[in-house]
Length: 85
Image (cartoon, rainbow, N blue to C red; front, side, top):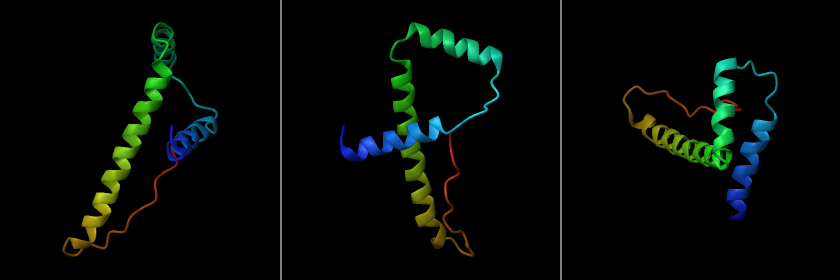
């Protein structure tokens, strides 16, 4: 793992740890726990998928921000990302 990858992973895990008081759907929670128990790598895979999706979303936002000024009548400015769990 590179220092940059470590930083991205650490940042995501810190954001996750900062989330408290989440109201859970009991059925969804039970199903998630059941499926996690039969796949030992599930948490790792979910974190990797989350990081890949965040990266893709950031790329898409950058591309939109670059294209927005070229649109006629556009006053769009890049917005900051919402805080994610």
